[in-house]
Length: 142
Image (cartoon, rainbow, N blue to C red):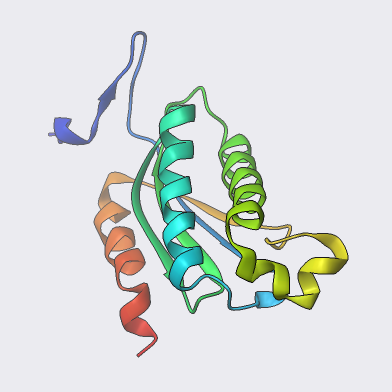
């Protein structure tokens, strides 16, 4: 029997699409702390609301990479979701966080994120395990 609480009902479809996304900062610079981290988390949730997907879990790992559990409708591609998240957050963080302007790596090419990312589709069975893994990112560092 399927757990109907996990299902999302659209106008023409019923779905449960979840993705574990990971990407890092350029050169693994540890800049995702304090004020930058707070603004980043707020921006990610605003982008999700704007484009129609949900961030179920979000955490920063070792101050240099991001873990997300994203639930999205079938009409949104993973590529677009990542493009929106990385592009908009980089642009806004450079504008809103003057502390990022002091990094010499930023002056050369103005890239906050490394170009790649990792994505894994998550089924209903693995969703809780991945959610716990993401939530425990800060605990693992200690």
